[in-house]
Image 1 (tube, rainbow, N blue to C red):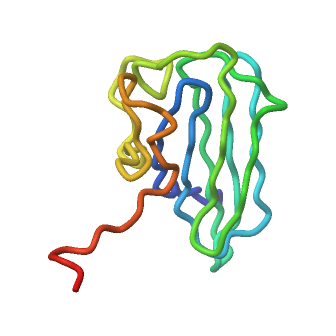
Image 2: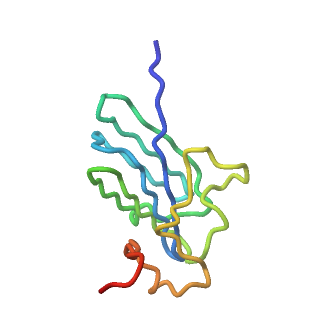
Image 3: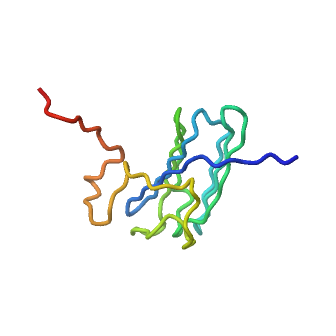
Length: 133
């Protein structure tokens, strides 16, 4: 019997030169990420209970495979993908269809085209409500 692979939640954000994917998969092992120049991205890993997770998709634009970096943390895996050409993508995927439900915008890391990119921090500080005394 074939085991079904599952999809972890994938959050995405972009800068003019990079796309960031945050894959929510705590304590993952056997992580494999493949980036190909024409925009093909694939991911696979084994979850904490031995279940397999994998997905692949065609990104909106071409990328630089050597410019793809992956950092695995305790709660998630962050992939930094270098765009072949600087510029803002209209969407993450090449397909104009609605993306799969596990792919969502990462509003904490989002930066708009007209924002000053240096002012867009990769991780936004947490603001405390109310005055600080």
